[in-house]
Image (cartoon, rainbow, N blue to C red):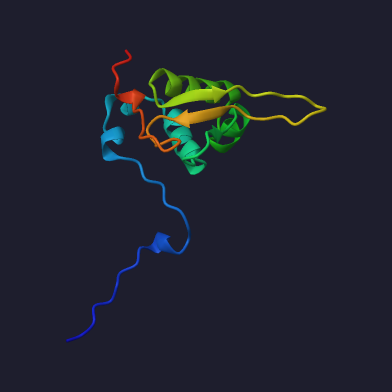
Length: 125
């Protein structure tokens, strides 16, 4: 009998994988988002860790999407309105001390050993 070769996915050697549930992708809340907000969700997910909120600012989002600063702000607003993210802490800027970005909790992902709250599933419109 011959040994069966294991098939390895091409992303196995490169590092992490981003997974988004089909239920979320097919939801009315997700489908009604503007395209920049959908891209922003993936950018936030790249920085997600279960033990701390995601630090991501409007300036960084505008650069990575790419879009105007106002469009990036609107994308964050849409994600908050629809229940996909919750702001944990505001940003601060000081030229003499260290500045920090806003921090976000991704509501479709686990956080601090608790299951996702899935606020986005609630009817918010």
